[in-house]
Image 1 (cartoon, rainbow, N blue to C red):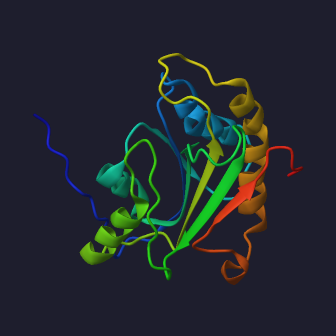
Image 2 (cartoon, rainbow, N blue to C red; image 1 turned 180 degrees about the vertical axis):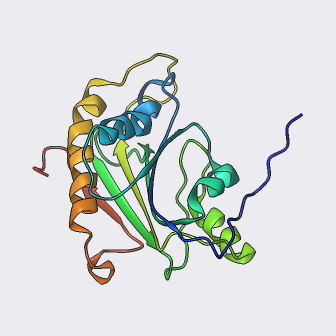
Length: 187
């Protein structure tokens, strides 16, 4: 049996600038959208160094991939049932805000993970931005995305790239609330 340990980096080490984490399982239809968006982002050119991760984990295991970075972007499937498949979402959680519960099919509760990390004194990103695409099917075992979700990948990739390039003033970002972008919006 393997044991998992929380890794908290040495506070004397400089923080790495940015990590982009794609969450999902590519064998469960639309659940693989986070992985696919990260693959598309890796093809883009960025001026700053970025660590890309493709993960099929959640919960406390995610904490090991958050600590030690100045900023974190998480890309995942969203299954709200309130928007049509292909709708884009963005949620910004700043370090100053009280962590908000953000759940996904990976049983990730980002608020609880961030709260525990604070309690442990971990060096957290100053901002964690969660991006997602409303999905249609995350339960069918098959490779490949449904049509509306597949079509939304370039728009979400562009939204993330625009946000990273423009690096908006943190006070101008709607931190702590979901923003919804319908796929047809030009980004």
